[in-house]
Length: 364
Image (cartoon, rainbow, N blue to C red; front, side, top):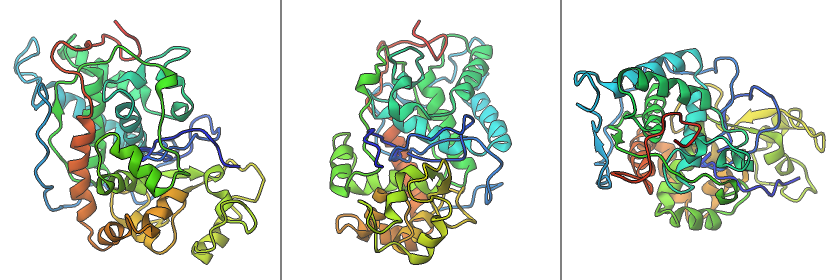
């Protein structure tokens, strides 16, 4: 029952398959990425109230020309307005009401950046826009971005791009969810192209080699890929994407899966039942909604849910790095902060390129 739909969620979603139950409760289209499916439901267990103190990340890569920390300083009619701080404050308020915006925004960020760069093209409405592509049908968070755009317009009209709003919001929820804060670089412009046919993301059924190739095409190393996929620490998956791993005789049966986990999941995902049920990608129930290294601890114990997740722990190309992440509680958060800066700078538009949209869901 493998879905042939391409999905980059790693992060992707990579954002990719993650989060709580969606409002419509229909089956979510999974992606690899940290990207992860963002759904909405009751407040999750283990949500942090204050981020832990962590080792500072290594120096961030040099930003592309046009991006810099504090880009909007002095650009609003009232030069004393800190519009980025206003956006961050609103994100914090929304996170306290609904912590599942963390995986939702991670997924949105990844899915946007991997197609034509971080240009907010995923936000465009239309019958054939990126938003309508299979992997993006379950992306959530559009209403929040619209709200944040209104916050920006109230004090700094026609100035703050929708692509910067996504970046600021994603950084803020990562910090609120237990990750290490980082200085988000701004100055992005919004794209002028959004086509469903261009959406091509890695599948949760891809091999490690295939995933490495997909990320290498975007200039991410195998280790950076593992870090982005580690965002599954705050995601969920519906049965469709792993059910075949549970049952002997099925095409994806995994005899190495932890036997206790397999028996726990069978009632959740009866064979060939078309169940709309889901489970957390991080099987540590106390931290399945916290940005930490528990996901890596689970997959080294053969308790991964998605095929690609478990493959990271077993494949010779990535197993060594996964094992390092599993035993070092600060390493994942530290590396994730650095990789997110790189992701958010992917193929950005700056200067006179693109536009500053007046409404995030449509071109000017």
